[in-house]
Image (tube, rainbow, N blue to C red):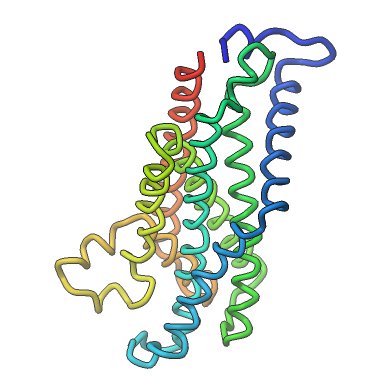
Length: 267
């Protein structure tokens, strides 16, 4: 997609309005893909649900979380698994669009150059939202009983949205640097692995000292700690600010980097 084509003036509106329209149209394309192939959402719900049921009913009694129920401790981490699973479909989807000629069709058209990436990101966040809603419902069915008020629920939702947005942009970036479909899936696994290397299943202080330092400081742990505090009406401490700094900073880096890589590749 040439720079001239990407930025050529179009009648009937400003450059900003056309850019928004380009992103909206391509977002609709990827949303329709979700509706035609709901198996992506099913997968993003099934895996964390299996983990929830496994640890809730088979292994939960072996984990000491202090006061409170284990399902309340476990549920925030399960939600982060649901978010990171959008990485696989987003990374492979971006890679396939780069390779199969879809983007090449826009080279001679006056289309916002990164609208394809924006569409993938918005669709990924939408998949995450749908999956999270289903997971929370399942959580209530198996005993999840948060004591959060409306403001704390809003804070938890906003943290999850930031987390999902950051994961989506990182996935879009990885999809552009991948060399094959298998490679794209492999790169996405780096993101999907992060919740398992956190304090998802057990308190940080019970983890072996060698691994504890990594678990305590990796970015997904801060999201989980923030969600636990908000859902259970406990002091948030520094975890909220650390989560915002980590995932807000990652987003601020991934967005321009992804856009620049896309323009360079299809200039």
